[in-house]
Image 1 (cartoon, rainbow, N blue to C red):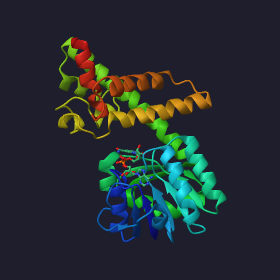
Image 2 (image 1 turned 180 degrees about the vertical axis):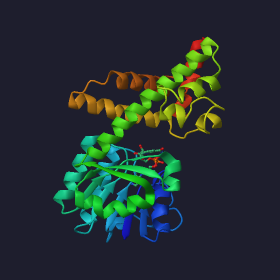
Image 3 (image 1 turned 60 degrees about the horizontal axis):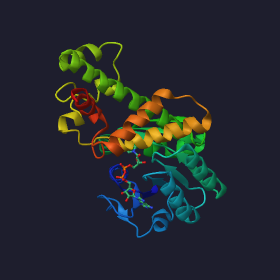
Image 4 (image 1 turned 30 degrees about the vertical axis):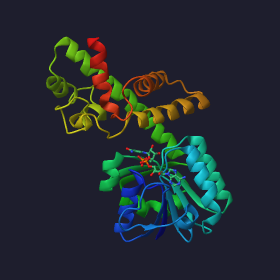
Length: 290
Ligand code: NAD
């Protein structure tokens, strides 16, 4: 397939490189980042999408996605599919899909889980909104970049799944960190706490796969001085998206609201910016020692 790829940052670059390594012809464009090996460099977004069967975007937010969509949709060939893999608000995902469909194009919102490691290894999970036909066309590309693609429903369903998943992640990470900090106060050994909780009803991905305590459980950003990984400000972005969606849809999400407020404080008022989102653990232990 001929693929246009826009947004070659931490996630986009390895995803595009994997598509090129699998034999696809990939034309890339980014306003700042260089194209990875195997990806040809276009000098504009419009040039990257000319003649492409599928255009993939991997951009910071919904505002930028909307601006890029305005630039590229007029230059995409009829019948091509615009597949956005960024994490953006549901309204932007639906608006861009409607704009693409009105121009005779297919569209998918296909945000990912799995982080930079998953992007490099080609083991991402895609959660996808859009038509059956568009999903079927792009599925072979999801299979290269990831290990699983779930077709969640119509336009916006992929972003809905993503923000619900990440709201759970933010809440469980905070719960795991505050429990470790409580264990410290009680004189309970962290390793013993992991041994119990990781095989008991308190287990979660945050505890079992991404343990926030250094030297405990599998290797995680905690073992690398909390270098991201998944930065606290990206978690704050996702919790803002889930709270905005909760507000506009009338859903009650009190734990999501509290998680958002704690990450907001951590990023905006404390030393959380640039640290992994699991650095909530040293944040709690420092507070407990104050
Ligand atoms: P990033 O900031 O590293 O990459 C974004 C890229 O978009 C940058 O290289 C930037 O120069 C480029 N860009 C910005 N405006 C542009 C424009 N108008 N035209 C072309 N390129 C433009 O971010 P990332 O970590 O790669 O994340 C990308 C998306 O994936 C975000 O929506 C993020 O929430 C989501 N995501 C990230 C992770 C992660 O662990 N990093 C995990 C899952 C999802």
